[in-house]
Length: 251
Image 1 (tube, one colour):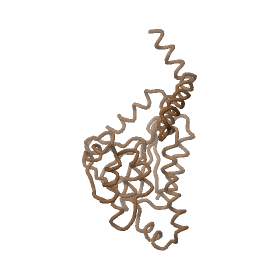
Image 2 (spheres, helix red, strand yellow):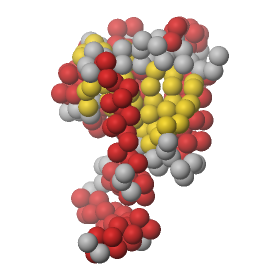
Image 3 (cartoon, one colour):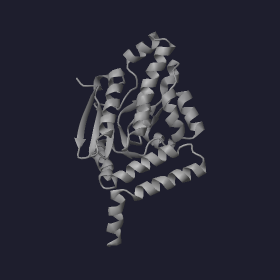
Image 4 (spheres, helix red, strand yellow):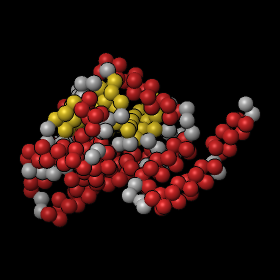
């Protein structure tokens, strides 16, 4: 059985974590499959967005028992290499051109919560549960913290990663970790309707907007303005922009 399933709904690609019997826990094979699928989708000019979701009752419960066993038996250099492989997944999500959306139902815990947090947009059912419980077993949600501290306040991030409690979808939205909450009973349809927006807006403008937002992160103000000017000029030269202006002027 494949660790990851892919299916297309028009220009939207769904990446489905397919270990339902393990609550879609992350292992080396699943992480590798996700990275490969993301890079493959990034090379497809027909796609407008990607959605990561989980099969079965949960989004993702974090690392599986085999991964934890591997961690306990590895030395520092081996653990560093393993951690860097996971970090690469977060980097790929951030650097692929089109939006990557996580659709969270059930539980998104530990590395699963990290995976959801690492996506550009997070959609959730009203009954979903989130949490970074790694501290409870002497571990640290270290890689996702690079994104978490960009999404929430420093004090909120400190509380989340040092207390390890579970929290609801409503709380996650209040923290700034979830964009939209939908009813569990209509979740699949609501996710489809939400991502369908990317079929109606300019693909090149969305890609340039993603590039701008993340490259601007941490820049001094004047450098950010300069980058904004460059992206603005690049957008003006695209076919989408030229066609859009022509259409607008003909109204």
